[in-house]
Amino acid sequence: SDINKVFQTAFDLMSARLKSGQPAGVFVKAVQKDGYAEKLGIKTGDRILFYDRYPLSAVTQKFFLYDVHTSGLQQNKADIEIIVYRDGKLFRLSAKEGLLGIQL
Image (cartoon, rainbow, N blue to C red; front, side, top):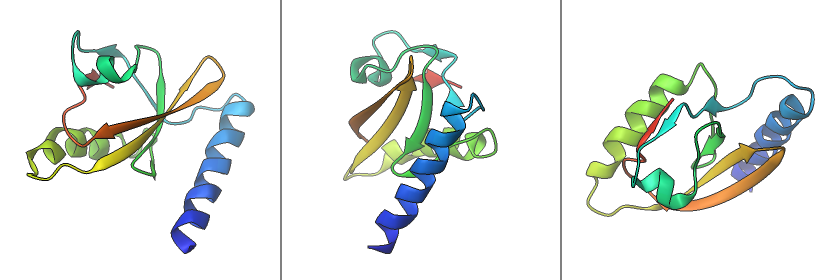
């Protein structure tokens, strides 16, 4: 589908940036102890590249913070995919929308 093609293009661009040493995603400064992000395996120093297929950057960081803190108010929380970059490797995490408990 067109959505998958757009996501793949964004994913390829993000991967190219990382491989060339350019900044990509948003940097996790802190993870709340016993919070949801910690339970998912997100660690301080990780870079979150995609949140529910939405590419993240310094430009989108404020939107991302707002979304993470308000999406948990929905009654029927949906499954979302979070793509994290750590130590040269990509991790795909499956989570429910809501408060992650991270500081960017």
